Length: 143
Image 1 (cartoon, rainbow, N blue to C red):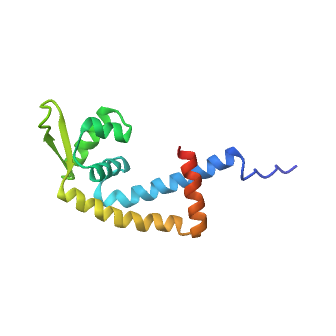
Image 2: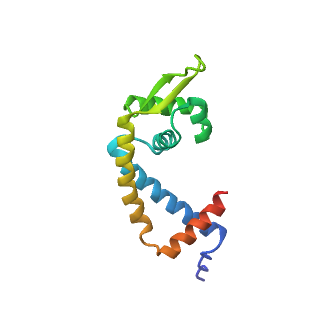
């Protein structure tokens, strides 16, 4: 007796397929970021700082939805690579501000150009209509 083929629309099959695509994207991301010795977590923090400007460590933690200690570790790693710098908060001597350096902004621009190409390769297999449909579906699942 041969086993029945799995229903491709079952919750389990969809979960496995989504997980496989997510793994593929993470692997591509890690490969893309390797030349800059940056992790995806570092990139997220750098992008948040670049988009929203100078902010306190606590705000970085909140925006990234990570523990304050983890935010400190991420900023330490970025600062060690001269991608961000810490500044004294003029409004609160106990607080520290973080901002992207000129070098950090340049590296972010290089990464954007490279990652755009990599993501394009992954999603190039989809038609524009399929991409739009996927974006809508993922937005529903994310919310």
